[in-house]
Image (tube, rainbow, N blue to C red; front, side):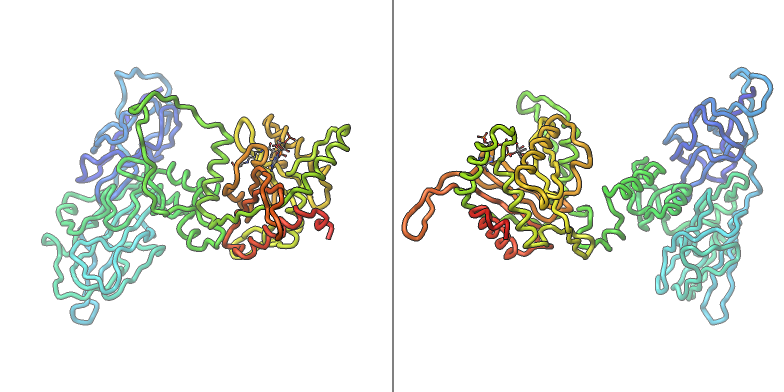
Length: 551
Ligand code: CAO
């Protein structure tokens, strides 16, 4: 097999251009004319094509290298070659076909009829036809300097800026983004007395270099000499024109996916946006982890990603400086629940109402029920009664059983109640379905089965989804009140703490009553404070006299 060196072709007067992208790796099969690397000057980026088909054996350049005409890009084992050739006898292949220099230092300039009006046409951009206008840098009324970039055009292999051949005030733009242009097309009309042509030529050259696999358009020395570029184009890393820094192929890729390139954070050298960056951005948008600005602008009350909060960075502290430390990765469940809790805490305007419910009689009933049912093995806890009581309150105040969907509220005619379970792996929320149709005994039984499964890490996805309201009970542990975080897309959550005997004034005397602390957190976009107070009060009434559940 013949080993062939693929070299940088004639790229005109641009020497020492930086390699900004490697498009192939060792072992890849490449076709003739396939793009191998992207190089970039401060005015344009271009892809260097392969002069031959074969398999990449060796890469001779790396990111950041400076290359010029004749630099070896890589070594290819040419397809179809008969015999192996020792590395010492590596054959030099001709560089990619380069047609005659085509960026001519002429831009058609003709008076537009009226005095002082100058037509600016697309100059000779080489062997490119119907190239798309991808950026327009100027608008009517702008004062345009000689050589100032007016638009960027792009083929699938290169992008180039078209400079103004004259100075003046822009009267009319004849192109817009998306238009296809060709040599000689009218771009703009300037009004200006100073019709200065560059360096003794009628007009400057295109302030860019363009390259295509089969037809590499390069500025001739004459053209480059003529192109005295006054206005800076988009230098890598610096976005003087707000232009995202990316190669033509990446721009094309982003456009095809509808990705707003200016919102993609470039991870490449000098902040260059790579294809991987575009893919990562697309994945993040698809998974809901982020939103485009357009989505955020359209986002209804229930949407948005919290981006743009303008928060200062998380403090980075070297804790070891202050004492011995041990670092442990958080478990999967903690990571997942953490991300959800953060979103819910940040995005929901949540308010918590605290209240107490007199459960003296209910607790007595619960204890006697458990005595009666001792043999059945099913133990009824306060949480099961709370679930039943909450269903009654949710039915009376249906917005607590709803979810935000854009600007609409979805009212659910089912009552599936989630309960927070403390497990060795972290917080989990199993869901008991159709609690309105189940009795306290059945709810108790299901709850104990689901809690066991949760602790053993055996809950299936179906057992953790579909809740319409959640209860988080710390009653078995202690505490007085707390502020639970809403489990979105639900709109409210009830926190319960440990009941205690308290002296309660009955109008005549203090009576010892078992009081249960309740903490109701609610989404203020959906629920008002008065409704929350009513919900808690109603819940308290039911818990103090459970017969009300039947009403
Ligand atoms: N007041 C006083 N005692 C209570 C009580 C309350 N509000 N709630 C429960 N208790 C008692 C029970 O009666 C039981 O007492 P006995 O052992 O004497 O019968 C004891 O506390 C333990 O109850 P439990 O916790 O096992 O049962 P439960 O039904 O109340 O709760 C479960 C089940 C799964 C919710 C619970 O085990 C749990 O994991 N709780 C933690 C939830 C949590 O972490 N929430 C915080 C989320 S935010 O981070």
